[in-house]
Length: 266
Image 1 (cartoon, rainbow, N blue to C red):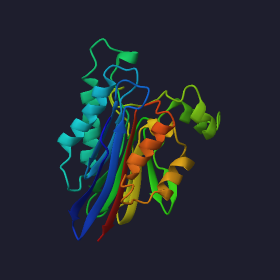
Image 2 (image 1 turned 90 degrees about the vertical axis):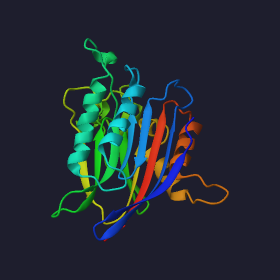
Image 3 (image 1 turned 30 degrees about the vertical axis):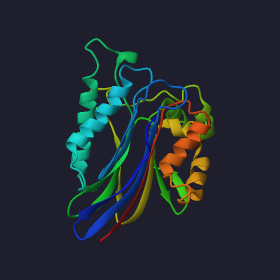
């Protein structure tokens, strides 16, 4: 069992301050014996990595991603898009090094990666939240009481949805919903999706492994976010509450959640 974590951090930016409030929790669940999820919540980076179930050293693969990001990204100051991309590619190299020379298929170490980082994209562009994703862990935005998936799953069922072969609702129950088409460590070169969102104003992000979305659909997740009001009698953070909900539904997989709220005014 992992103790839930919450915190507040500040980053001094040119002409302003970015304040981040976050809550984090990662649990092995009620069925799995090994925790293959790893999380990072250290400004300017917030991420979830889900080691590929059934693959060699999935737990070590996700832990390796966190280690590489911690080594590459300076704490409590904005990073740059180039450094984040370098950390992603270095993570891919480090995870591939976990696999033996003759390993292939289920013997290849791998992990998903989904996260956001505050970056300085240059004088003409300014500060942005950079979201990045490889695999089927997800990044959601939470704004004005509405939950929206920002990332796009790299999965076999998502490709079927995109091709019009099945609906999004059918994808949630499809027998191949666990088959992912991209992962850190799977190929020599990793192809990460990235997005840049201007940092000015307020942003909230939910980052999670599929252990959450297997148990709660987006409507149910949004209802938890809308209804939660911290109090002395229930001081739990949103990540803690969402993980508790997933465990109450059966906790069939490792489940990890990072919820971060950021405010930046120049």
